[in-house]
Image (tube, rainbow, N blue to C red; front, side, top):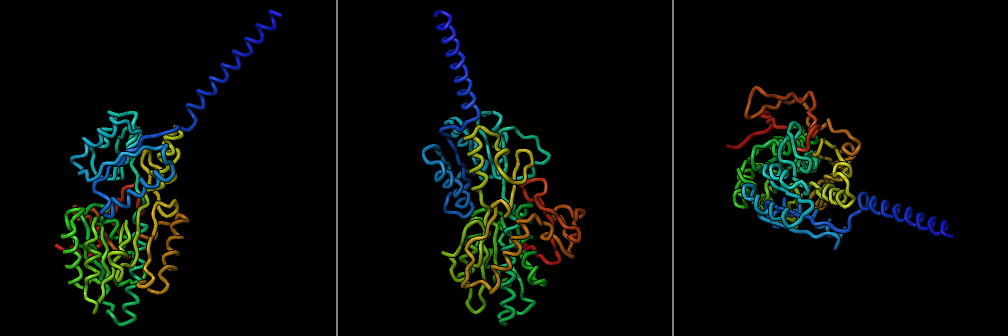
Length: 397
């Protein structure tokens, strides 16, 4: 009887040990019950870029509900973001997302090894040494720019066919913030998309030297309109260019192509199409990785470059929204779909390609002959095409 009693106790102890081991294993590999997530915005949700980024926050709230506590800081300038970033980390955030362009995020990350810092890509990280808890990400925007260029080209071709403009008036304008490779890559892809439909099209670019100024952006757009541009697009952060197009003379309408946020409400008569980077796939996957106690890059799907990730149409990181059927030329959707399908099937070498030579504005000895296709985002999520196609692009002084 005593032996049976001892055997029973030993069996119970073994089972208890097994239970504890299983519990610990589940604690390590199983899902967490809650998470604290921080978002730092360089602007507020009244501006297209920040509004578009904030949709990722909304997606997290919708998916996880009370399991996730979200803290948000808005209107944080790049050189003033240290305090709010530290505040979020000190308040227990497990992961922080930032849509600005400051190196402070990377520098602060080692001080908070228990926090994952995820920043929208702002420079080439391929040769950089970064902390393990620092991550960068960006949608391959050139794909959306090229497709929106196709929509613009279809409209220009219709305007030529209808006698509204002549072939030599196929001029598109671009309101740009700064001459960074990200901006240059975007407007070049846009023009090349236009030229895939209207080969004689050219572009005028006007820099504002600021990311967000309604007055300067609208003034720049009006200048481009006065120069004869019939399509305007932008890489700036207000609705100024869209309003300028909507207010243009109806005798010679000027159509607008948006970025990040639809402009159909503020420019219903001239807004043509919008390309947007979708931040939701990365942000949701990163949050899910932490919930599952996994490395972010093991959960995110895209082009992985260390702790840097990018993707395009094929993973839903870029999309076209709000094609204005009342304005768009017939066949526009089909033409866009054809290009999008090529992107989704992995063909990307048809964008930066053609009988043109690009010159680095900061170093004339640095050139690229587009007879050899340039592959954007090949090794980094940050766009690196920085060559001006001076034969077809005029930079306004």
